[in-house]
Image 1 (cartoon, rainbow, N blue to C red):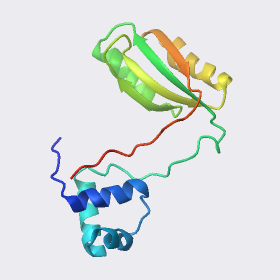
Image 2 (image 1 turned 120 degrees about the vertical axis):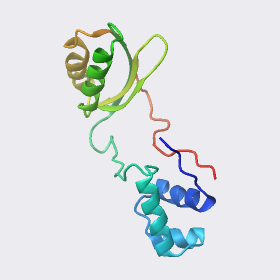
Image 3 (image 1 turned 90 degrees about the vertical axis):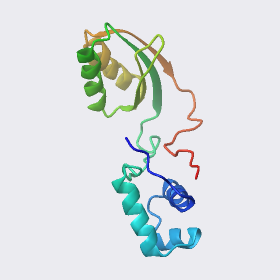
Amino acid sequence: MHTPDLDRLDVAILSCLQADARTIAESIGAKVGLSAAAVQRRIKRLREAGVIEREVAVLSPQALGLTMTFVVMVEMERESLAVLDGFRRQVLADDNVQQCYYVTGNADFVLVVTCRDMAGFEAFTRRMFFDNPNVRHFTTSVAMDRVKTGLTLPLEP
C-alpha cells in the first residue's frame, strides 16, 4: 500500500479527528488555519487514500456490562495457510474478539477478548478453541485494570 505524503496541515487535521471524529470542518479549520471547504477536501482525500479507514463511536464496555477483558495467546496445531485463514475468519466473525494479532514466538495469535463474566468467557473458549481441532493450546491472562486502550496513532509531519 502506498503511504500518502502528509503535510503538517494533514497531520493537524488527523490529530483533531482522532480526538473527536465529530469535530466539524469549521472548528478544525479555525485550529489549523484553513477554510472549512479546504478541510473538507483534505478529509475527503485522506479517506480516499485509506489514511482514514472509518469513523466509529467508542463505546464504554463498563456501561454495557462487558466488565472482563482477557488476553489470550493461541497456538495452532499446524501453520498451514488453510488453518491460519480459517482461524482468522472465525476471529473476524466473533464480536467478543476486540483485537487479533498474528505474531511470532511461542503463540501464533494474540487475542484481546471482552466478555460480561467468566461464564461468557467459558462459552467463548468452547466455541473458539475447544470446538476447533486446529487449536493446539491457548493461555489466558485476565486483565486486572484497563490502564490504556485506544486506537489513536502517533502523528508526525
